[in-house]
Image: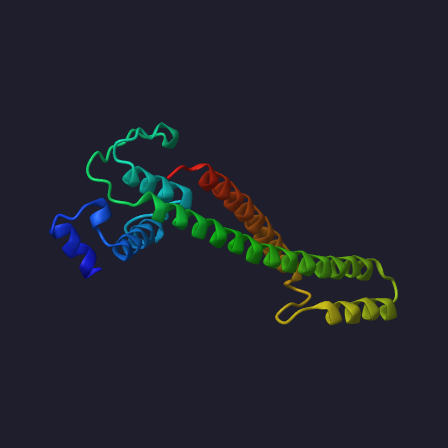
Length: 186
């Protein structure tokens, strides 16, 4: 980073700035923008890339980005490096989707298991003989995961359902981010 700063201070511009310094600069800017800080909220990845595009083309109008080019100074970002960053971000987002899909599958399996418990609980509530009640109770006990019991399993169902809907929404948002990123031009 010191090298980058000294390049700026020495007045180097565009192609005069070493390639590795440009890569480090873009990575640093990207991280600074997307990282949630205590004084600011998280910025979407596509919005971050739009900011970087704007910096890479100081003279081009960025109407597609809903902004006019406000940085009419020196081109601070190499568009080639920015394109590589796009690819890395897209690959990383696909990986996040894959991991989230695995978790969604896990949540669905847990909800199926809990649905069985719920079914046996209903049967137990309708049972007339103590032997039937004991049978359903024992079967439910076999299906409980660690920390689950007769008193809290319905709350666990609600928590899993909430987690499932949250993760499915996250996947849809990540897919939209990828579409936006793919449409960006560096």
